[in-house]
Image 1 (cartoon, one colour):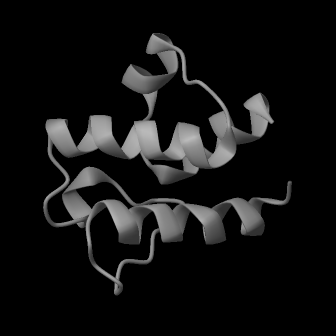
Image 2 (cartoon, helix red, strand yellow):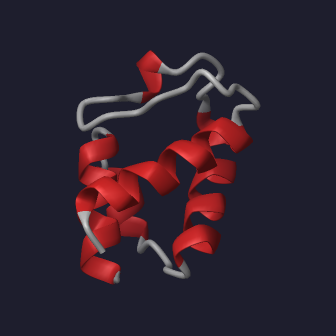
Length: 79
């Protein structure tokens, strides 16, 4: 799956989880950039991403992600 396709799907997931149709994430997007992205919402977000892409993040992956670009890297590795 192309990186652009992953970002399209990720934007849909982010918009759903955060209930905000204006969210657009990019390579450098972090939790600081998205209103309401706290630790609890992070867990919900990761679960929604795993469901959307039919993957499972390892604990190491979840704690090492620094931005959405790294999240996309992990998604690509899993697909």
